[in-house]
Every structure is written in structure tokens, then in C-alpha cells.
Image 1 (cartoon, rainbow, N blue to C red):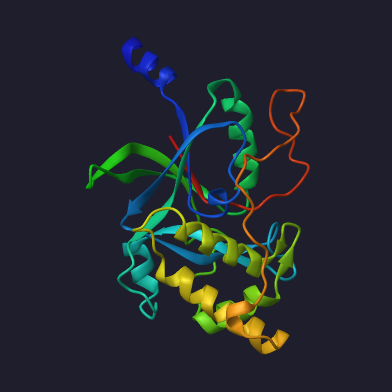
Image 2 (tube, rainbow, N blue to C red):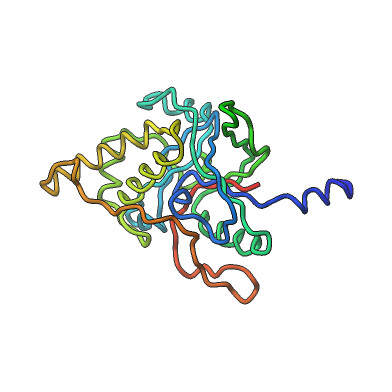
Length: 250
């Protein structure tokens, strides 16, 4: 890499793309944000959560980003085989806090995620275009120990309904994510996520004895950046667990 390329790299903004809990629980030190989407991927609750929405003994389920072709190769029974777009939010981080936020996100995504380059799309003047080239994404690859793979909606909803971890009930994660995805843009949709939300509300109604349309679940508060103590080395202390969020960075 020559001096010009190095200079351009140094000036590149640090952008993270959240497709999971980062949508409703942003990272710290955000200076701008914009909704966007990925093509050729699916968002699935195919990752075991041993540290946020479950425990090592009873892991919950959280989302991961999976390449559509890879998912199709071992998930022929997926209820929504045509899904291939994933909506989320791209956050630009204040440059002076980049190292701190990187440390925080590396800790947050520690349970079985690896990095992958992707492109992020958006709409400008009604036309689809790539808005970020070569971003990096935390992906739960199928060979990592926490990857569960495809599970039928009914089985998956039962696991999520009963799972609880340090970050709270697993079903709360689903409800908040579904509401957040709906709010991103008129075009934002996720068939798998919304079907899972519906089934969980049905379980709430059956087991709580109230109509599913009025089953209470925690409302989404006004989104604000997370606050985390700063370690003496300038990074963020990994003292309190947080949701794995599913994110990309550029």
C-alpha cells in the first residue's frame, strides 16, 4: 500500500452496520446514522447465545448474518426461501473514540462471530445503490461452535420463549428487533423475524391467558448510544455483558 492509499485509509470514517440488537441499542459515540440493507444474505436466529440471552447450560438464540447460498445448502426446509435482503443501520463513530468503540464491539461480538467483507445498499432519489463498499461484518459461520443452523419456527420459538440470560429474556430481544426493523424504512421487512414474533406472541397468549394482540412486552425506548466505562488503556471495560448485536464495520 502506497502513501496515498495509507492516507486515504487513515481518513476513512469508522462505520458499523447493525443488523441485530445494535439497531435498537446503538454503540457509543455515534455522530450520524442511516438505514441500509444487505443483498444476498439472510438474517436468522441460528446462533446460540450463551452470554447474553441465555446461559451455557441453556443457550438462547440470537441473529446472525448468513450468505444466502450457504444457508440454502443446508436449510432446504426454510419457511421463507426467497429472503435475501437484510435491513439494518449504519452508524458513523466519532473518530477520537474509534479505538474505544472497536474494543467494545469486539467484546460484544465475542461468542462465535467472525469478520467478513460486505457491501451496504441504500436508496438515493428512489434508486438502489451501494452506499458503503467493502464493509466488515461479524458473521456466525456454520463451522463455529455457537452456530445452531436451521430450526423449525415452532421449535425455535419454544427455545426463545423460555430462555433468559444476563441481558434479559430472549423473547424481548425478538420483540424489540422486530419493532426496530419495521421502523427503519417503508421497504424494510423480514419474513422470518416477523413470523417468529407472531408465534412468540401466540405462546404469550396461551401461557399468560390474554389475547395475543395485547400481550405486554417491553416498549422500545428512545434510542441512545450505550454508555460504558473506559479502561485505563483507553479501551472499554468488558465488565457488563451486552447483547451481541450483529454488525459490520468499515
